[in-house]
Length: 94
Image (cartoon, rainbow, N blue to C red; front, side):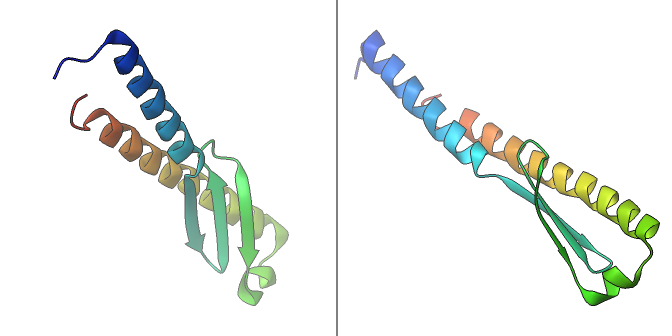
């Protein structure tokens, strides 16, 4: 079946919109030492939870743990985003 240029452009717009929506929903998470950090696809914090044990740590230790977990959560989000992008490029017809 032959497609017109207009139809192909419409399909590309739909795929791009779908990809953008899926990427915007990506979250990364990391947990350790009673702390859970969640970030969005840009690596910006969107959630931070502590249990009682985490709060018993001193401020410096807690800050270091949060920074480490934020880095791990950002790596998790990036890996998920890369998977979405690679799947988008491997769709049939692409």
